[in-house]
Length: 181
Image (cartoon, rainbow, N blue to C red; front, side):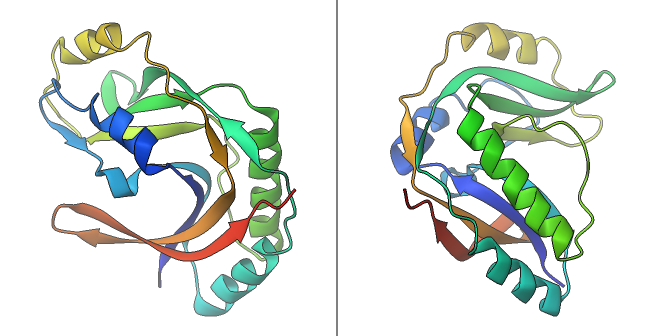
């Protein structure tokens, strides 16, 4: 059963900007450039028939192209345990609209998704539990606090499958959906 998620891919030139940030934190598992994306909806493990329904229903989403900018870096933690370093997406009403549409489609085909607040970001690194980061995260945050990417035009979103690989997750683009107006 594949693990699925829907996301905006990050263009190569933005991935290059993000790759320049990826250093200086021990025990960080840095994401590869081809795995950088803005998750719209994590679907989890999905049966084949539900996956086909999801693919079909996502194609009915008609939305405008829109500009996306990454502005600053942040971290996600559970208590004092860091989970991820991220590049934060600047507030964007069209992105919020698309995320709501995608989540509604996922729910309508029977996928149970988390109901937490949408915090758009690109994951730069993940941490295993018990990772030793010391003062390095604070240094990373201070060093990159003024980071701002060039804006890019989101022209499509994609359905991805995820599987575990030796060097981390391997994402495969299963379907692409154009933003057409």
